[in-house]
Length: 66
Image (cartoon, rainbow, N blue to C red; front, side):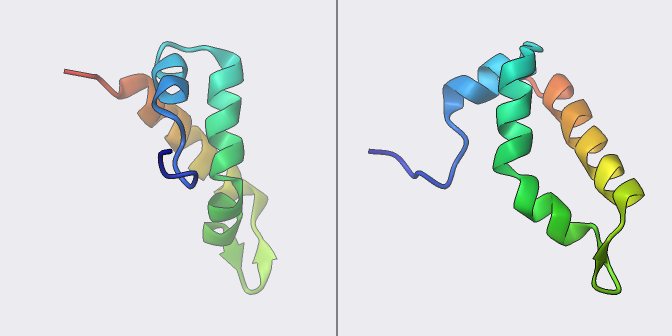
């Protein structure tokens, strides 16, 4: 019944706890946006793409539910 364009809450909780499958689900959910953000002159820059992915993973592990 919720918004299907969002990552499910349970997945986010599992990802912040370090569950690899949940982290991968989050990365897959944002894959198109990450690739779009990594475009440079019409081509995906792999270094930029990796940097964005790493920053997203870092942000997941720093997120707190207070």
